[in-house]
Each structure stands twice: as C-alpha cells, then as structure tokens.
Amino acid sequence: MAISPAEFSRRRTTFLERLGGVAAVIPAAALVTHHADVEHSFRQQSDFWYLTGFDEPGAVALFLPHRPDNPFVLFVEPKDPTAEVWNGFRWGCEGAVQRFGADLAHPRADLAGRLGDYLKGAEGIAFRVGRHPAVEPLVLSAWSAQLDRAPRNGQAALGLVAPCPLLHELRLRKSEAELERMRLAARISAEAHELARQVARPGLNERQVQAVIEQHFMEQGARGPAYGSIVAGGDNACVLHYTSNNAPLADGDLLLIDAGCSLSDYYNGDITRTFPVNGCFSGEQRALYDLVLAAQEAAIAAVRPAADAEQVHGVALRVLVEGLVDLGLLRGAVEGLIEQGAYRHLYMHRTGHWLGLDVHDVGAYRLGEHPVPLEPGMVLTVEPGLYVSDRLPPPEGQPAIDERWKGIGIRIEDDVAVSERGHEVLTAAAQKSVAAIQR
Image 1 (cartoon, rainbow, N blue to C red):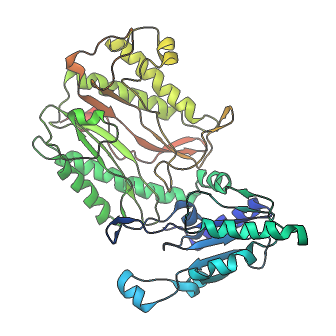
Image 2: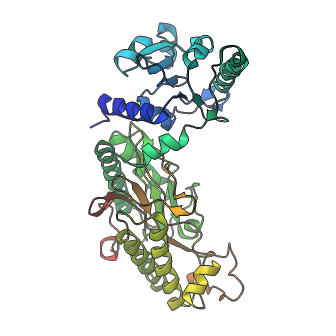
C-alpha cells in the first residue's frame, strides 16, 4: 500500500509545528541533462517528496507557520496540452490542491513575484543554500528586501537556516506505512538475488546476471535499481563500488552482488550476497565467508533499542579482527589492531548506514560526542566484508598476504529495522547460509 495522503498531511503538520515561526522553502529536483538535449530519468528530491508526494520537476513548496490559514503552498508547472504531448501529464495548480493537499497553488513562473509576500512576517527562513541554483537567488532577494525594509517597519526574517536537521530527524524514524514499503522493496530485492544465484555459472558475463536482477525489479513494479548494481566476480569484488559489470564469470571464483530496487515512491532495498560461481567454496573462500557471516550475524544481534550504530560496527569489527588473527592474515593483539586500524587494508568501510528514501539515508549518527541511540522505526544496513588484494599494502608489522588468499572479496548485507523487542531483518528471504548457497 502506497503512502496515503493522510500520512503526507501528518508529516507536514509535524514539520510546521517544529518550524515554530520560521518559513521553509523546499524545492523539488530539477531535470538533469544526460547528453545534448536528453535528460536523465527524473528522480524527485527526497525531502520534497517526503513532505508532498508530488513527483514533478521544478516545483517549489512553501511551509508557512506564520500564515495558519494557508500554511502549505505549492508552485508547480501549470497544465499545458502542448508540453504534455511532449513530456507527459502534469497535475497543474488544480491538481496540486485537490490531489496533493496544497492550501494554495500557483504557476511556477509566479514564484519570483509572490515569494517575498509569502515570507513576510516569518521569524526566519529555512532554505538549503548551495543546492538549488534556480531558486536560491529568489530566496536571497526576498530576504534581502526584508532586511532593507527592517529599519523602517521593524519586520524582517532574522536569519537564514537549513531545514535539514528538522526534516532529517523526522525521516530517520519510519512510520509503519513506511516500513511496509521497505518490506516490499526488500522482498523484491531478495527475490532478484535468489534468481541471480540460480542463473550464475562459469562463462556467463557479469552483465547477464545484472540483467536478470534488474528485469525482476521492473517486472515487480519497481522503478528500477536503487543504485548502480554491483555484480563483481573474483578480484572485481575487491573494488567496493565496482559497476563495470562486464567481465566473464570464472570457474572457482566468488560472485559478489550488491543490488536493491527502488519503489515508485522511492523506498529502497539494499542487499549484498556473495557465493561461489560454480557452487562450491574453496578452503580459503569458505574460511573468509564463514568469518564475514559470523561477524554479520553478531552485528545484527546487536541491533536493538538503546544500542547505536557504532556499537553494531564495533561488534562486527571485533569478530573480523579476531578471525583474521586466527587465519594468520593479521598479527598482534586484537585491541591494538583495532585501535591502530591495522585491519583497514582488508576491511576499509563501516558496517552499515541508514536506509529509507535515500539508499544512504539522512539522519545523524552522532550528536556531538554522543552516538544517536537506535529507536524503533529506524532502519539500517548491516554489511561487514573482507577484501583481499594487492591494492592496499599491509601496514608495517603486518604479514604479507599469501597468494592463495588474493582476489577474494566478500560482503554480506541485510536491511534491518529496529523494533520494540529488538530488530526485524527485512531481507531475510535472500539466503546466505553455506548450506543454502553451496550446491
């Protein structure tokens, strides 16, 4: 079930309450040129979408707590049959009010002439500077005009502030409706991973596996991939953001797939699985896979209310470092290795990130010196990995890497929602046990 108009309305009400007397200007995304006069597929700006559900480019939303009769105003492209023949349906001003709950709506071309009047009486202006070049001069001009008039009438917005902290705190905690959308994105993404594992075999090209995954996304009604799918065989898996996806799969190699779908309303899945192309682990592959899986399972078990993302990372890191010492890939006391970062040539990223409307979703991980505690409704990925290659030299005092380990890249990633009693693994349908993935 898609997010309801009532939920968008509740979000706006909460945002307006938290603004106090400050007016917010939240622009939509603009079209971005791909080449010549061809644009990339449109992707709405997530903060704008979160508050409006309006999926057209170039719009601008005003949130005006100092105007309680008309606190939500949209500026949109008006209905235009000629433009719609070329570029598709528009809701127009009438649709902005009737379908999307705006109190008032105006043509986008009227923003310059009307913005100053709408901002009069606000205690401040919330606007993200540096991101919206078509709108920023209009906001600054309206603010400047207020400051110029202030000596005469004593009224001006006192400051320009970013809306991000307020909005991103709201977005960090998902409602039950949002969790349902993320469960759907996780299910579709997990099904695609299972299909990929069934078709993968030596001699197939990475791109052919990518096609199977992304076809399933589209068949199930998703917009498509949430990010550039990573389909990395053998040593390619040691490149964290490998997206060339054009190499043949070799007998005896592992295949790492990091892929997830994005739904029509932009909620995302994000899964990584690693498995042997020929269905059978070598001894070294199995040893490292077992280690990453143990680290991931321990880290997932640590996800619960009042814990924090740093603790989740710390649990995974300790399991990995202890295992690497046991395997002879690291040398020294575990505490010292962690403190010195002597493992970073083998594990160079954090164990997870927030997930939601953005794949690397918004929300602070720390507030000053204090980690943000996990709360029900937060969703994060848990994705430890190991990447054994010649790309980064071992730190001084650490053993050289034997050839038998090189070219092994493993990451295992799940999407985990914090619940009242602990956590829910949204992506559990994507198999990861050795018994399930080895044939």
